[in-house]
Length: 144
Image (cartoon, rainbow, N blue to C red; front, top):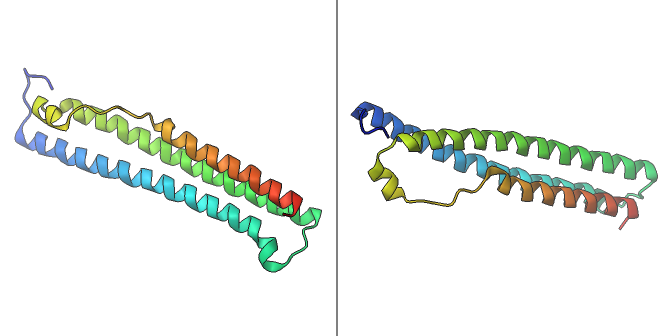
């Protein structure tokens, strides 16, 4: 915050409101990423379970179809995770701008925290999805 140019009470209120909304957005988007990852994994498990539940004999055509569906689910989940990642990055950048405009007292009270890069959380989700896809296709191909 520039000490030569103090901000008005109205500007301070707006900044605090934007700070609160942005932190809520971040929490929401991160929650959505975890939910999406879980639903993607659940969908892969359901695809693998289709032959077992329906006592379906896995022919090569069925195995290919289920594998294509599994790949499609994984790609769609990965795409949506990436879009949420973009929203998270955008909100983090906004939060940095807002934080820089708040008073020294506010920043001292909040304290320093180690910044986690957005991809550090996205990468494990994508790796888990990729491993689940490989396992799913292997199970489908081997009829386990």
